[in-house]
Amino acid sequence: MQTYDFIIVGSGSAGSVLADKLSASGRFSVLVLEAGGTDRRFYVHMPLGYGKTFFDPAVNWNYKAEPDPGLAGNADHWPRGKLLGGSSSINAMVWIRGAREDFDAWAAAGNPGWGYDDLLPAFKALEDNQAGADAWRGVGGPLHVTDCSDAVHPLTKRYLAAGQQAGLPLNPDFNGAAQEGVGVYQISTRNGRRMSAARAFLRPAMKRKNVRVEMNALATRVLFEGKRAVGVEYLQNGETKTTRAGREVILSGGSVNSPQLLQLSGVGPSALLKGLGIPVVHANDNVGAHLQDHVGINYIFKGRLPTLNQTLRPWWGKLLVGMQYILTRSGPLSLSMNNAGGFFRTDPAATRPNMQLYFQAFSTVIPKSGERPILTPDPWPGFSIGLSNCRPSSRGEIMIRSSNPRDYPRISANAYSTEADVAEMLDAVKFVRKIASMPAMAEIIKEEVLPGPSITSDADLIRDFRKRSGTVYHPVSTCRMGPDPSRAVVDPRLKVHGIEGLRVIDASIFPDNITGNTNAASIMTGWKGAELVLEDQK
Image 1 (tube, rainbow, N blue to C red):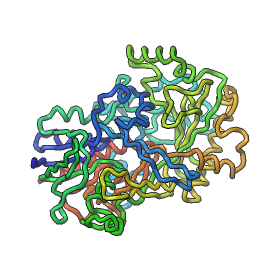
Image 2 (cartoon, rainbow, N blue to C red; image 1 turned 60 degrees about the vertical axis):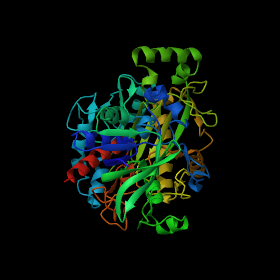
Image 3 (cartoon, helix red, strand yellow; image 1 turned 90 degrees about the horizontal axis):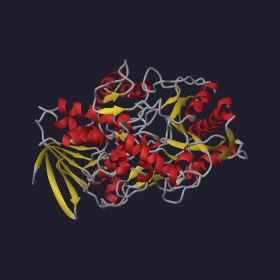
């Protein structure tokens, strides 16, 4: 059985960074186990191609949450990346770090080293921001961030004007001095191609002799000697294999797979594990608990001006933008569907934003089942203004159903399960309508298609957002970080409480969700986590 210094389970947003940083000195050998396959696929690298990967079982776990009372009984689709780069290879690429207050709250909860001022150097070091260096942005790092200001659809300018007419400031950089306002989103691309964690970090690391990446390798359990993690068992090509870690096993499977693997390995709620016949290595009720996620909804409008619908729907339009993309790596296919967005407060007395906005210059009211028709939008000029909550108080959980590693875990999101979450979303959707009613937008809107002008009472608005809301794919906190073993899974150095030689380093360790898209913070967690691991090596 081969021994590596470090075994990393998962090659996603954090795992790719870990593989790069832990192997860079040449001192340590690193094995990466990835359950999925290669990221060398056209629709992975073409930014707008993620409409095609949204349900593709070749690159996507395609999880389904439990029917959720808070979402009118709907069972939400949960895409998660199952390939090199993980979800960074199939996400919408919006590059938002999170607010200063988010990370300062992590530190204040007893996690030294995780405050905003501690983490800003890591964010700057890993970035190569096209907008240039300043007090907040970094240049020269491995991950390129694109400034899309000059490339967005012309309708975006109307959205930005309407946001300002509704009272929000224009914000040139959501990762800068402040978050509040409307603006164009920066995205993780380079030269018109997706800049996944695999492209930025893992591919360079794979050229080193001390790095081995095993694809189609499903980790089935962590191996222990007493309370020390010493290796990993995995399935590959129908064969059960084992490998040993001389120094540490690091779980980077993300907010679904990391708690799942811990539970399968005997680390988790003892009643659950005993009930499934799994020997308990270390009892911890927090494993899989405290699930937080952002939940969002789109308001869709029929316009009087052409939108991307007229470009992307007809065959000749597809041909034109396809040729533009292949020849010049530019045009609509080189961007995210979210051209712009913003952050606002539903309560003016609040000190900071609690809602995020998204502007999309196309609409998809008529999707077929099992399809996300970004590349075949509606046959009329449509666009949407979407939003999601930033720090909801609802909590869910992710728990295994059986001792079989191939069985998907039970995902109970528990959305809108608190009165506070319902109340703020009600205020938020009213604000979306306010933006749409501003002169810059109102003059080009023919009608509101969804939810439609008949939906006006509070009760109807709540009924509508329960029925139409869904995850915006930012699950966190299922292996949350904290100093108290009775309330957390890992300590501030990301070591699993009660176990030696085992860490979790991915978005599942977030003590609380952040204000914005989670991918940048997941990549930062890989960077910061690697620094902690290297500091602890004798």
